[in-house]
Image (cartoon, rainbow, N blue to C red; front, side):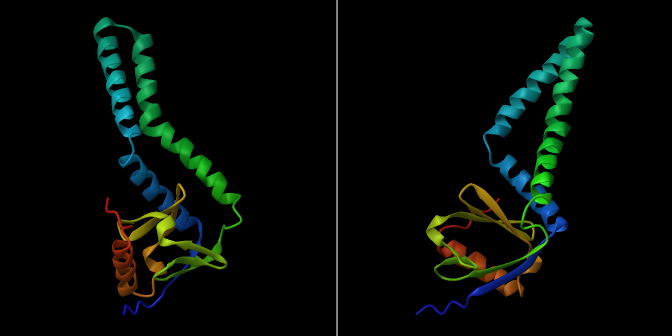
Length: 167
């Protein structure tokens, strides 16, 4: 008989946790998405545009290629970040206390219960964890666990349930 002790997770969904969650989930989703290959093609074409513009003396093409590269590397992430900040600032969860209980059957928060078969995956990123459920990522900071043993127990349980994924 398996005597799994429920894991209780407590943390505050504050600006600091939001910042970490955005950075880690954005990077994870980009690295594991087919869009990155489209982006590489996009950047390669823009860089060919820069070379062609320099050889041909076309200032217009050089400007366009430079703007496209700046958009891809700087503006795109900034726009997504600004949208996420607005969502966080208007969220009813802003600065709220989050309490989760992980059991052998699933994840419980207040009156909501998510069985393990509905969880798409649990991904350890750096010291923290992203829990994917219905196309959403839920961030669990490392300091939300009572001990390192609880965090390891969660990862072991997720592995047992076939829901642990590594980056």
